[in-house]
Amino acid sequence: MKRLHRKDLWCWSVFNERLNIDFNSFVWTRAAGNVVIDPLPMSEHDRAHLRLLGGAAWIVLTNRDHVRGARELAAEFGAKVAGPAAERDGFPIACDAWLSERAPLFDDWRVFELDGGKTPGELALLVGGTTLVTGDLVRAHRPASLMMLHPDQGLRDAAAARESIARLAALPHLDAVLVGDGWCLFADCHESLRALSEPTPTGRS
Image 1 (tube, rainbow, N blue to C red):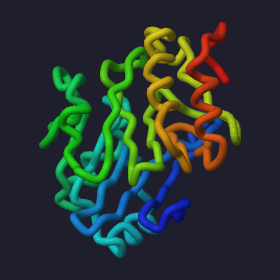
Image 2: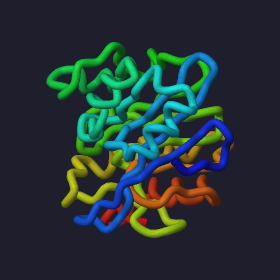
Image 3: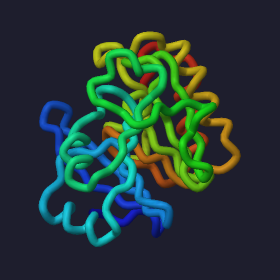
Image 4: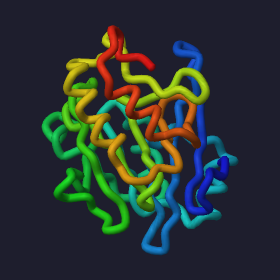
């Protein structure tokens, strides 16, 4: 796995040929048990690295389309699974906890419920007060430029999505935006999020 900008955050990726971008998964290492976010299937190298880091206590899924390799990882490491509370009905995998802004699961992060995307209540996660992790709604198909999910890819309500992104842009300090789809951002995070929150013809940056 790749080390990220913080010593407690790691990433592994799988290239998606249809979109010509990487899909990303993240590991947040913590003394109370590691958290894996939107896990893709793992190579043996990455699986061994995760074991070295202490395995996985929780798997957090930001939306129902990011179940990915969660079942296999949960079975291998005995991890519990958490999903978005707003997607509880019909969620494709059994969950041990349902996350919302009122029920974030962990004291040392924040959960944001986003509107307007492919699924109701898609989650964005604020780790350590400065690192934002997004699922599908906020993504990046080229470096240093965030974009919003396109209507052709499932965006349901652009105005509601922009309002949700404006809440993220208002966070006091962001060092990084770690996206599930595409290029992660490590500079000018507020400016990029603010640009997405402004009305545009396509919702793209």
